[in-house]
Image (tube, rainbow, N blue to C red; front, side, top):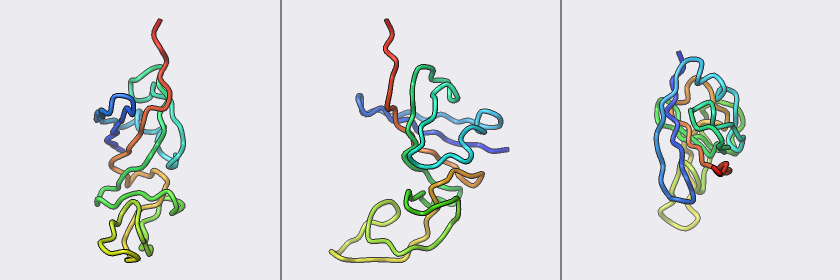
Length: 119
């Protein structure tokens, strides 16, 4: 059974909240990639559009938008998700997860891009 922790960020208020989904509610997320949009109804937030911005797998390795598929691989990084260089020009080989959500993904980061106004 697949279980995800969804972290929903609201850029307007600067706040975020965590929602756990599992089983059939988690199924719409499998196969989605970083940068895809999803309807908020699947996590109990009707009238909201969500943008997938990242996440991490069960071992804590971060997802990178430039690594394709759901694979875990070692890539040479100079910055961005997965590595913060201490010196200028520093590069290191780090283990990261690809940009596709799979069963191994534990946390998914999303942000609200469109909120339906109540009248």
